[in-house]
Amino acid sequence: MMDDNDAYLIDSLVKQDEAAFEQVFKTHFKNLHAYACTITREETAAEEVVQQVFFKLWERSKGLSISGSVAAYLYRAVYNESLNYLKHKKVQSEYEQHFTHTMKNESYRTGKKFSAKELEVQLTRAINELPEQCRTVFQLSRFEELRYREIADHLGISVKTVENHMGKALKILRTKLIEFLPFTVFCLFKFLNAVS
Image (cartoon, rainbow, N blue to C red; front, side, top):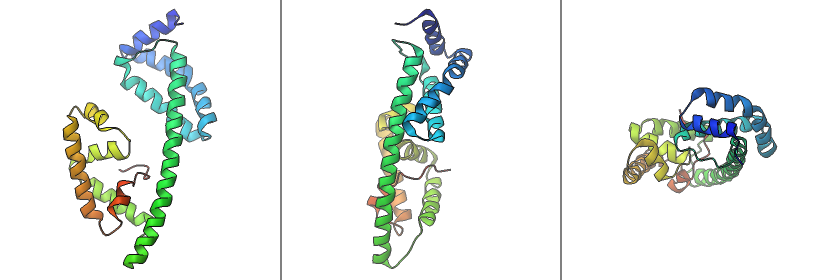
């Protein structure tokens, strides 16, 4: 059941009222952070989770649809975001193990030895050299894990254009990184935390 205060806050958030957003943030951040900590078991991760929830709340506020209380909505969002974090962390760990194993085999086969740090430097450089729109699409797909439709909506372009940019990015990166590792491994190479 929604009370009058929640109804007012939701209406204000939809109108992107900064004061209302700040009120919600100050009221709930501490408790949401504590809740996220119980799921992620990491304070820093919990803080990132809650910040991401509030970022999405503001970014999508114009289309906000909350049937219950604001608090219930936020706790549910933090729960889902925390599960996404744990899922991503598990996938990241699996990719790291797979990458390490593959690199050892590849180094043995080619007689070349590349460190993970050297590959990271080369990958970062190659991504930064991509055309701007192409690079943005690639980063949103590989590092933000957005679907093509979400990227298209975010950038105001068609899904087909997103597909074209991704195809171009992968072709360029495959050429630049061919000596470092098999392209199949590169396609899975999501575990870098960020690219400058």
